[in-house]
Length: 540
Ligand SMILES: Nc1nc2c(c(=O)[nH]1)N[C@H]1C(S)=C(S)[C@@H](COP(=O)(O)O)O[C@H]1N2
Ligand SMILES: [Mo]
Image 1: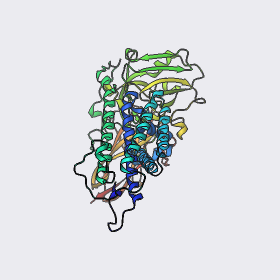
Image 2 (image 1 turned 90 degrees about the vertical axis):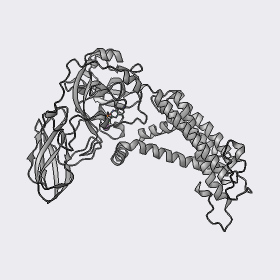
Image 3 (image 1 turned 120 degrees about the vertical axis):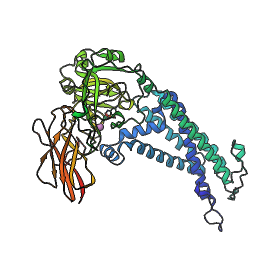
Image 4 (image 1 turned 30 degrees about the vertical axis):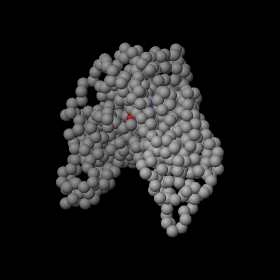
């Protein structure tokens, strides 16, 4: 719209350039209105079926490992917002081009818009959780987009020359009440009001439809109604004195649910109700099993502290959390179905189509893998998988921790792959031994200084944590009592800090005597490795 202001008052304005800006703006507004109309349809067909989300979801699926890694490295858990912004900008650019094209070659913008709509519809069809009706929003977006593009262009950037190109703002409160109110296409203010008004109505409609969609989504309401039965043998609470939580700045032993990292490919969190949900155990089994919510709660529930971590977590990163999970042992569930001898993988599937390939052994041995329904005594938060997810101690989330899980298919690694494997991540993902320095950081006064953090060596357990200053000898840190072989352990070490700049390093040793390797490795393809290093400035 800035293109409307006359840049050189002395020279007569160039008609083509002036209408180009309006045409582009009309294209963007028309596409926006189409997308908003699609959001309204999406209230019925599902929030994931609308063009913005269907396309973004597809982009997520097509994103290679390095790009995912880079996005997480730069944006952390704001990577989704980044993606949606990019998709919106690209869409706006294409829509602007369609507007300009249509204004110069009337009729040509239609096939471009239609093609875009078809592409959005096709994207929706690739979504595993949408049926054929999922294309409906794209169709509506296409129709609304084309009709509105023509209608708007006729008013703001009519093709033939010879219009009043006078740029004076003559609008005398002629707020666009309809096409007639803006009959003078030459008046920039009226054009702006028409486009701005239409855009605002579209934005309001789109956001309103989104709000209705999320209000209708039953997950949160269903979760509020859940009463979780206690575990058969509830764990005693972890005493504060068993932790190092009192150390200022240390990671608490238990990660509060609201602080628990969230990683998934879902742009709209699947919102399941316990009534909608069921889990099927299929594939290489003696008998298929299907369990509803009540069936799960009727079984004996176990409780276990488990530290969950993401393969994308860099050394020293925070894509790791520790919670008390409650659920049904996967070993028991699988036994009900009777895995056939050839099966070595469970391909677990989320309601949104995401999959993880987990060794059958990890789900049946005694490490405590479960179909979790509770986190820290509450039903799972919706974004952490309500009503049910898998939790497998010792494996990164991408090969095990399926949220909103609805199927466990017994299969073979030779025949199937989880979601991330064809995208460049290892088929197997045991969690690497790791340690992290939480405090101190930055600048500290000289003298006694607490160095502290967390370390984990999943399934084996942390036996020792060692710290060194400026590459000197390793010193033994104290370990907190809280923790098991399937959780992290907090550690602390008293350092007599001397003035100057120092580098602290940490490493863990597991109960089998394995020392955390120093050689650095990037997260892809199977997890980061190396020592966490922190530079500290000590003031004298
Ligand atoms: N349905 C679904 N489940 C998923 C994922 C996903 O993308 N979709 N991501 C996995 C990954 S990579 C990780 S690290 C964990 C993270 O679990 P959280 O978000 O509860 O911390 O979830 C796993 N489960
Ligand atoms: Mo992950």
